[in-house]
Image 1 (cartoon, rainbow, N blue to C red):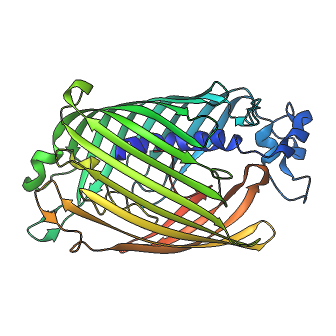
Image 2 (image 1 turned 90 degrees about the vertical axis):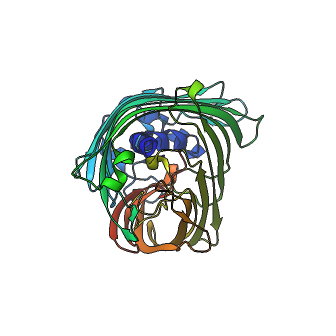
Image 3 (image 1 turned 60 degrees about the vertical axis):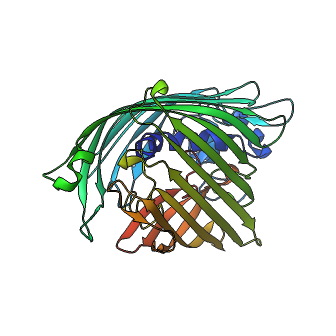
Length: 400
């Protein structure tokens, strides 16, 4: 869901750091004497093992307030940025439960961001880890004001329509760990109150779709599996998530429909220098869903909502090659298709829908060894766009 994606984008930086803290290796314990050093102590920016620039010790020393910059790139909203101000309820590395599992700290924060196409998003949130990480909660409240392009097919011609979506969003999720396993099961509730309007004079064929006020309330069941060695830049393990959502009047929704999504990420450590990552995702919504909740092909090099349909399937592969020391080169390729009935009652069968593909290259630097975090730059070539991305951790979204 796009508005949820926009709001969640403000949370990704803190969620990644928080969940990543649960994977910090035990050699972080040797740095406890550094936990109260200043913000710019030079000894916190070098790795004691290889002497290279590294921010692991600096991250481990953070307590209380922690500002995190938000960097936005890609063709969907254009370039932009913002600030995520987090308050850490404890150290960033968290604690260790009696069963040996690392427990991330609870985080409360506020965030805001803006982009060059006039989009603005602001919100507040709390990420909770309770009872030795047996229960995880997420609470978020925000105001999206987003400008997006949609591409309806009018009389056989695909046209661009720019739409503004502004309003309020609320999200609450609770997930319970099943025993000592890597499975989490739970539920979440999403409420959106949005005013949708054209940015400029638009086509009469879509006027009834893009000049409407929406109230949407949906309850979802969630099943999640996560055995990754780190959520930053994984090299081993698997992540999977299944979501079944119902939107209905008794939940505060003007529209009644079902939505389902599933994703699987698999990480293979091929050798000391090569790692392979594979991704498969699928989404589907009922035909009564608003047009902006229809899923779309989501890959680097393709703008979000560029290729929409009632159903979407996609897959991607990424190869990471450690060229020298902490420096890596990556290559990626993927393809997806959108099909089914659109909001103009036009239907495209799976066999008739086109595969929309992209490929690209990039580089990474391992900036925080103890957190398993790589950062770098990607360039992707899609069917129409060449896109530039600043990537922190994994390029794949596991948060929504």
